[in-house]
Length: 148
Image 1 (tube, helix red, strand yellow):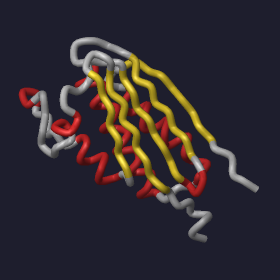
Image 2 (cartoon, helix red, strand yellow):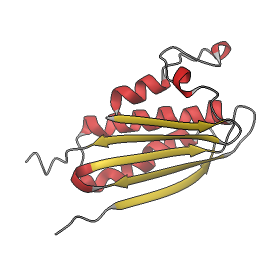
Image 3 (tube, helix red, strand yellow):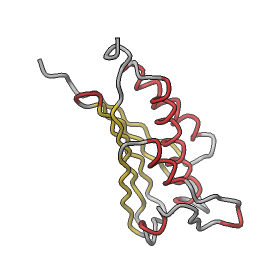
Protein backbone atom coordinates (compact mmCIF):
# COMPACT_ATOMS: atom_id res chain seq x y z
CA UNK A 1 0.00 0.00 0.00
CA UNK A 2 1.37 3.39 -0.99
CA UNK A 3 2.04 5.78 1.90
CA UNK A 4 0.05 9.00 1.73
CA UNK A 5 1.80 12.37 1.65
CA UNK A 6 1.13 14.70 4.57
CA UNK A 7 1.55 18.46 4.37
CA UNK A 8 0.77 21.74 6.09
CA UNK A 9 0.96 25.45 5.34
CA UNK A 10 0.98 28.50 7.61
CA UNK A 11 1.33 32.18 6.86
CA UNK A 12 2.56 34.64 9.47
CA UNK A 13 3.89 38.21 9.68
CA UNK A 14 7.63 38.84 9.42
CA UNK A 15 8.01 39.67 13.11
CA UNK A 16 11.18 38.45 14.83
CA UNK A 17 9.18 36.56 17.49
CA UNK A 18 7.65 34.42 14.75
CA UNK A 19 11.01 32.79 13.99
CA UNK A 20 10.46 30.71 17.15
CA UNK A 21 6.89 29.94 16.08
CA UNK A 22 8.15 28.63 12.71
CA UNK A 23 10.60 26.23 14.39
CA UNK A 24 7.91 24.97 16.78
CA UNK A 25 5.34 24.59 13.99
CA UNK A 26 7.73 22.51 11.87
CA UNK A 27 8.87 20.30 14.75
CA UNK A 28 5.28 19.80 15.94
CA UNK A 29 4.13 18.85 12.46
CA UNK A 30 7.02 16.43 11.94
CA UNK A 31 6.42 14.69 15.28
CA UNK A 32 4.22 12.06 13.58
CA UNK A 33 7.33 10.82 11.73
CA UNK A 34 9.10 10.13 15.05
CA UNK A 35 12.38 11.69 13.86
CA UNK A 36 15.77 11.36 15.52
CA UNK A 37 16.50 14.22 17.94
CA UNK A 38 19.53 15.39 15.94
CA UNK A 39 17.58 15.36 12.66
CA UNK A 40 14.86 17.51 14.19
CA UNK A 41 17.47 19.91 15.62
CA UNK A 42 19.06 20.21 12.16
CA UNK A 43 15.71 20.98 10.54
CA UNK A 44 14.75 23.53 13.19
CA UNK A 45 18.11 25.30 12.78
CA UNK A 46 17.75 25.50 8.99
CA UNK A 47 14.15 26.76 9.28
CA UNK A 48 15.29 29.36 11.79
CA UNK A 49 17.94 30.65 9.37
CA UNK A 50 15.54 30.79 6.43
CA UNK A 51 12.81 32.60 8.37
CA UNK A 52 15.35 35.01 9.86
CA UNK A 53 16.53 35.82 6.32
CA UNK A 54 12.94 36.69 5.35
CA UNK A 55 12.55 38.93 8.38
CA UNK A 56 15.92 40.70 8.16
CA UNK A 57 16.55 40.81 4.42
CA UNK A 58 13.20 40.23 2.71
CA UNK A 59 11.40 42.94 4.65
CA UNK A 60 14.17 45.19 6.01
CA UNK A 61 11.96 48.26 6.46
CA UNK A 62 8.47 46.78 6.68
CA UNK A 63 6.38 43.88 7.91
CA UNK A 64 5.24 41.40 5.29
CA UNK A 65 3.96 37.84 5.09
CA UNK A 66 6.07 34.70 5.31
CA UNK A 67 4.66 31.43 4.01
CA UNK A 68 5.90 28.15 5.49
CA UNK A 69 4.95 24.88 3.80
CA UNK A 70 6.07 21.47 5.01
CA UNK A 71 5.52 18.22 3.12
CA UNK A 72 6.47 14.69 4.16
CA UNK A 73 6.67 12.41 1.15
CA UNK A 74 7.61 8.79 0.53
CA UNK A 75 10.55 7.25 2.43
CA UNK A 76 10.65 10.03 5.03
CA UNK A 77 11.66 12.76 2.58
CA UNK A 78 10.82 16.17 4.08
CA UNK A 79 10.40 19.29 1.95
CA UNK A 80 10.14 22.71 3.59
CA UNK A 81 9.40 25.81 1.54
CA UNK A 82 9.80 29.25 3.11
CA UNK A 83 8.71 32.18 0.94
CA UNK A 84 8.40 35.93 1.22
CA UNK A 85 7.15 38.61 -1.15
CA UNK A 86 9.87 41.03 -0.06
CA UNK A 87 12.62 42.87 -1.88
CA UNK A 88 14.31 39.77 -3.33
CA UNK A 89 17.99 38.95 -3.76
CA UNK A 90 20.03 40.65 -6.46
CA UNK A 91 22.55 37.79 -6.87
CA UNK A 92 21.55 34.47 -5.30
CA UNK A 93 24.88 32.79 -6.04
CA UNK A 94 26.78 35.61 -4.30
CA UNK A 95 24.31 35.68 -1.38
CA UNK A 96 24.94 31.96 -0.78
CA UNK A 97 28.69 32.45 -0.40
CA UNK A 98 29.79 31.98 3.23
CA UNK A 99 30.46 35.28 5.04
CA UNK A 100 28.63 37.38 2.43
CA UNK A 101 26.22 39.83 4.04
CA UNK A 102 24.37 42.90 2.87
CA UNK A 103 24.11 44.13 6.47
CA UNK A 104 27.61 44.17 8.00
CA UNK A 105 26.67 47.18 10.13
CA UNK A 106 24.24 44.93 12.02
CA UNK A 107 26.93 42.35 12.88
CA UNK A 108 25.44 39.79 10.49
CA UNK A 109 27.85 36.89 9.93
CA UNK A 110 26.66 35.99 6.44
CA UNK A 111 26.39 32.30 7.30
CA UNK A 112 22.64 31.70 6.96
CA UNK A 113 22.71 29.78 3.69
CA UNK A 114 25.91 27.93 4.70
CA UNK A 115 24.18 26.76 7.88
CA UNK A 116 21.14 25.61 5.90
CA UNK A 117 23.38 23.68 3.49
CA UNK A 118 25.25 22.07 6.40
CA UNK A 119 22.12 20.75 8.11
CA UNK A 120 19.97 19.81 5.13
CA UNK A 121 20.48 17.37 2.25
CA UNK A 122 19.55 19.99 -0.35
CA UNK A 123 18.89 23.74 -0.38
CA UNK A 124 17.41 25.55 -3.38
CA UNK A 125 17.00 29.33 -3.46
CA UNK A 126 15.06 31.27 -6.07
CA UNK A 127 14.54 35.01 -5.99
CA UNK A 128 13.39 37.96 -8.08
CA UNK A 129 14.12 41.52 -7.10
CA UNK A 130 10.97 43.27 -5.96
CA UNK A 131 9.03 39.99 -5.99
CA UNK A 132 10.51 37.95 -3.12
CA UNK A 133 12.52 34.87 -2.30
CA UNK A 134 11.75 31.18 -1.87
CA UNK A 135 13.99 28.72 -0.05
CA UNK A 136 13.29 25.00 -0.38
CA UNK A 137 14.95 22.74 2.18
CA UNK A 138 15.05 18.98 1.72
CA UNK A 139 16.08 16.27 4.15
CA UNK A 140 15.50 12.56 4.49
CA UNK A 141 14.68 11.62 8.05
CA UNK A 142 14.85 8.17 9.59
CA UNK A 143 12.15 7.60 12.15
CA UNK A 144 13.13 5.79 15.33
CA UNK A 145 10.57 3.18 14.32
CA UNK A 146 12.67 2.41 11.20
CA UNK A 147 15.80 2.01 13.33
CA UNK A 148 14.13 -0.28 15.84
